[in-house]
Length: 164
Image (cartoon, rainbow, N blue to C red; front, top):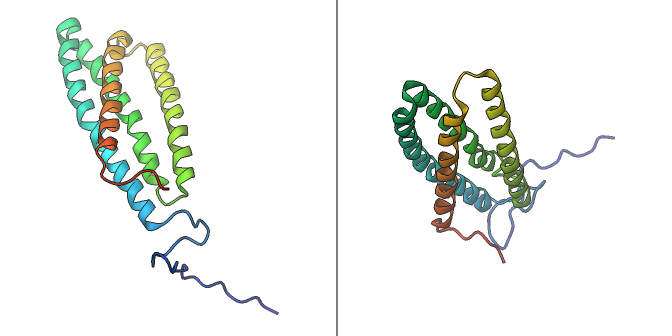
């Protein structure tokens, strides 16, 4: 005796008229769209101020330490921009998941970013390819600019973020 095939079409909830994920009833298309919008806004909201601060840090490093300072500042800024971009990208990758999973992934990615920054900085210091003091001077303000830009972009979103 064979069992009947499961229906591949997602159920339609009568109250909202939207389809929901049968494996994850909390993840609706509206939730996914909100997470995607927030991740896009946070990525670009953090990216542009960080690039501006990175350019300024490279100019200051060039004045203080010459060409090697510019290279170190650029390396530090590129590392921090790449690592800080992981948070919004993780949100994008988990957008269709349960909202609690998205939040947990965002928190884990934040801790992972800090650990990754530490590891990359220690590797750069051990290799001795760049002046890590100058790289750190570029890394700190660039990271701060990225984080502040993310927070401002998130605060400016017009979508509700707390469901009651």
